[in-house]
Image (tube, rainbow, N blue to C red; front, side, top):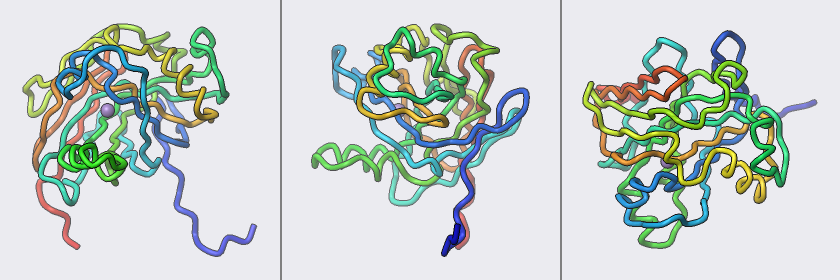
Length: 236
Ligand code: MN
């Protein structure tokens, strides 16, 4: 093949126990825990809806390391959203919920970092959310833990501390749409591919971080994801 420019290296995540998981696309579910839906001004069980981030928004964080992100441009209200991330190993379309587990390679802990002020402004204007959600470094993700090790993750705490203070505290059992239902709904609209990631939504308690803050997210069975917001602005 005669590539006329150098391709950007694919994004990969470390896999617990060895190897790398190549990231294809990043899908995200909006408002998938009831209490968070309420804090965002919504109620009830609306059908799931999806948005995306580019694969290169993913910041891989190796086991035992603290990831670092820059405080992004254009915002004064950068929010944390701790989420269970599903890593798709086998693609497919129109996958039934009952068949979904066979398509899951593993799970990871992720942060759906959000420029909330920009997202809210886009919502108000009925415009796309990309500027609020799909910016660079907006998706720190820890190692992928194979489902072969964890089994299906159906319940257990999902929490986030900022500087040691508990901010988000939920349980995977409280997902409005389960992982398997989410895969069913998502694969009705997109043909899933190996390497796709699905951010499954965040529990209540989202809030702002500032430069120098350290976030520590935990999901039962997956350990901890630590991410710091760089203290100094990047020198250009
Ligand atoms: Mn989210």
